[in-house]
Length: 170
Ligand SMILES: [Zn+2]
Image (tube, rainbow, N blue to C red; front, side, top):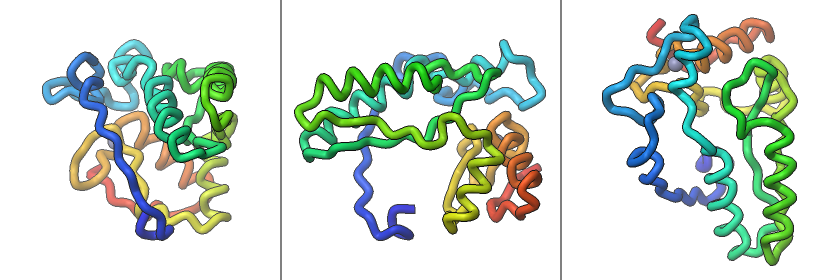
């Protein structure tokens, strides 16, 4: 994606997530639940306070570069189990980051109140190279097509009458 847009990609390793989290997203032994699994089962995909940690780390790095903004692609719907994706959380951590950084950094969260269908619609309008995106909670060659993230993505493409260019196992 960074090559597509001609920007430099910097990565920050956060191994402690895997060291201390029991989330199925980070586990080598736990399976990611299928989409139709219950809400409680799907809670195994939660990495507690992940967005809070990532925004904090990013704010620290960005302040060193004198950046005015950092951005996150979170979404939150009423049935979401990812509490640090809530608009209220993003607004509050944005306020804290602004107060706590020399550059008075603001957090941009343009997708927060949008549905997945609206995100795909916007991405299509902007010419997003969807073939370079990854949504699946599993880490295989193709996207699984069965985890809650894959199912929401497939539904969003369907509702936009668009063909999803990424490959799925199912
Ligand atoms: Zn998947």
